[in-house]
Amino acid sequence: MSRSCLTSVLMLTLVQAASAQPAQPAEPPVVIVRGEGVVRRAPDRALVRIGAESRARVPKEAQSANATAMSAVLQKVAATGIPADAVRTLVVSLQQEFDYAGGRQTPRGYVARNVVEVRVDDLTRLADVLDASVASGATSIHGLQFDLTQRTELEREALKQAVADAMARAEAAAAGAKRAVDRVIRIDETLQAPMIRPQPDFARMAAADAAAPPTPVAEGEIEIRAVVSVTATIK
Image (cartoon, rainbow, N blue to C red; front, side, top):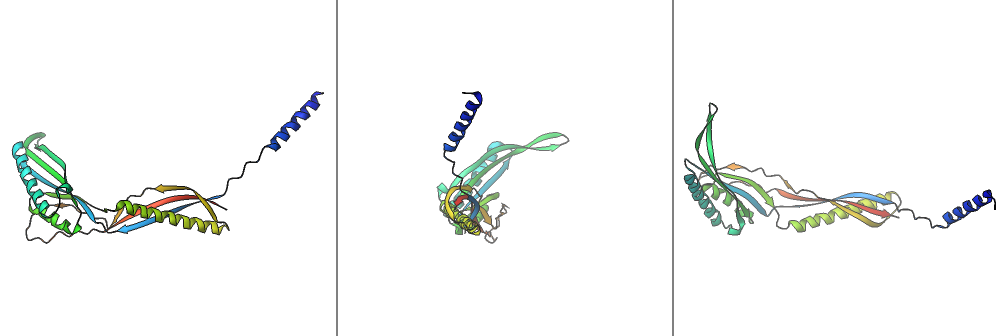
């Protein structure tokens, strides 16, 4: 057989082999949409940091005075109905302080600090806890945060709402193209930080005054938001 005939036979064989392979199915069209879900609830729990600060010429006196002050604070906090397991110590410190003049530092004394975090599960007691702390010797109240005891359940509720919103958007987009949603092939969640509206901004240096009115506290509303991206095929 001549070389030209052999080449023709090989080319014909390759063409037949290629045509015999099954064609790859086309990828189905998809729609990608974003959905949001929002759940708002009034908080039912609070965390607050309460501190006592004491100064003295010698460290032992500063530490002793601070221990006495914080013990009095904790007793008053317990008297408002806060259980012992709702209080935890965050900071215990003792530091030397100095005065600076003419480029020189002169020892002034020592400062002892003790900070505890108090969990308040009944918000009707929050103002009492704050006022009792100040009246008993606390020198700072800060870091007030509101929270929800059923946060996990509410996060799941927001997530369900977000997926339902995304599906409604997918169906609307498909209908606009004279199509219909076939099946969901991917769901991605975007984590969202909880929001408090209005955001409490509470920081109070103690100024004991037995005649002072109760401390006003605005709990606001906690917003839990879920955001998802849904990819679905359409037909």
